[in-house]
Length: 144
Image 1 (tube, rainbow, N blue to C red):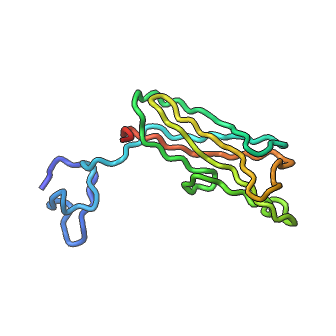
Image 2 (cartoon, one colour; image 1 turned 120 degrees about the vertical axis):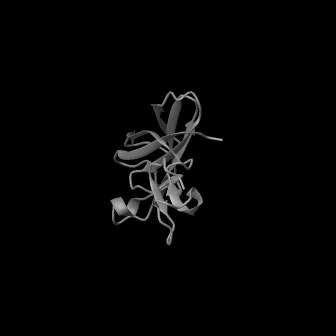
Image 3 (cartoon, rainbow, N blue to C red; image 1 turned 135 degrees about the vertical axis):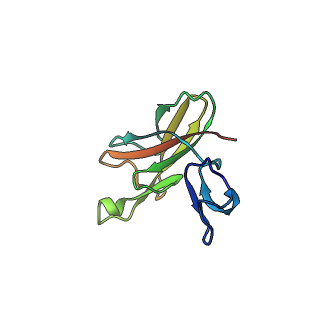
């Protein structure tokens, strides 16, 4: 039994006030990801951009080690590529174009990259700007 605890959730059938840490589903004593920095950033791909063009944005974290990070595109799903179906934007076309998401993280900066890639053969350039917003989470744990 632990008398000095924060958050605890016991397994079914165990009293959270008297159970051991091993009988818990969750205890704040466990080594879990701890939040350091959250934010949003936006990259705009200008109208007329061709294929194999890159864009990036840098977020400074200054942790002095390489932290664990998660990045979510504007729809809230975790992904490494974003596919834009032009027919969703212009209903009478069938072109598919891709924007590839990647990132690097070092001891001071998170850098998010977007690169245009034509998956359909003739999709880019678009005749309009594309704005993609990202939500990022930087944690205090060192990436190993």
